[in-house]
Image 1 (cartoon, rainbow, N blue to C red):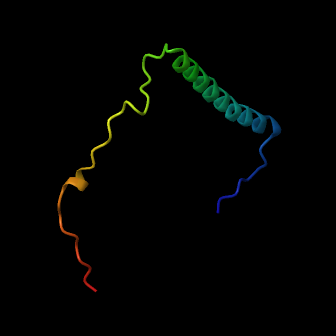
Image 2: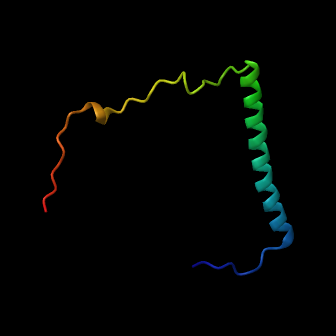
Image 3: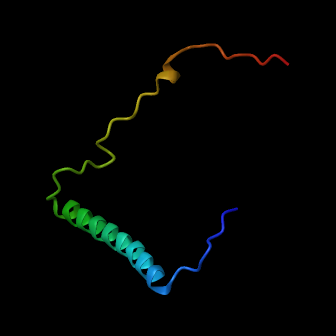
Length: 71
């Protein structure tokens, strides 16, 4: 198993932690903005899941016999 050779400094650790927190914050802001636009009816690019067509599964439509295991 790989082991780091030296201990990570506090400043590097703090920087990485802040980057991680910022990503979460930006995702939350984006989600809130999308929810706000949907609730007001100003959304242009969002399609609710009800409007989406079901995905066709091609293997369901094929009537192929099951393979038998040779044991």
